[in-house]
Amino acid sequence: MNNLKMRKDNLLLRVLELDKVSAGGIHLVSGKPGRARTLSAQVVSKGELVDDKIEGVGIGDRVVISSLAGQDLSYGSDGHTLSGLEIGVDYRAVRADEVLCVLGDEVSYG
Image 1 (cartoon, rainbow, N blue to C red):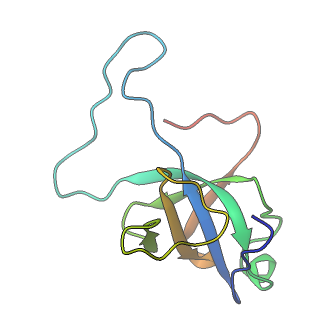
Image 2: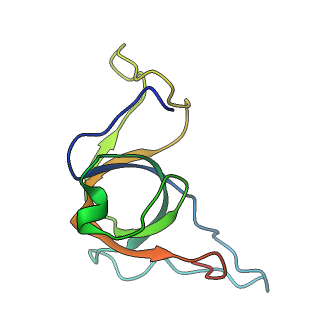
């Protein structure tokens, strides 16, 4: 993924799937209809101005964003592809100020 460089204060995120069933076997409810949810994502690429907006965010970090933030990127749907992206994986381009928080190693989400 080193070939793909985001511009300015933009991030390319790989949206992580949230578990539908908790570790204890409880089915998780997705929330109220019409209400924005949050998503967990992993930073794949970042622009050079990201650290000015969010201190210490790096490639591979897990972040939380609103489900309404950014622009979804579809791979190969119109015959055009982005080099280095995996087929069947959801990606989203967001501005750095749309990131709600950066998750530490010991923090679980979902």
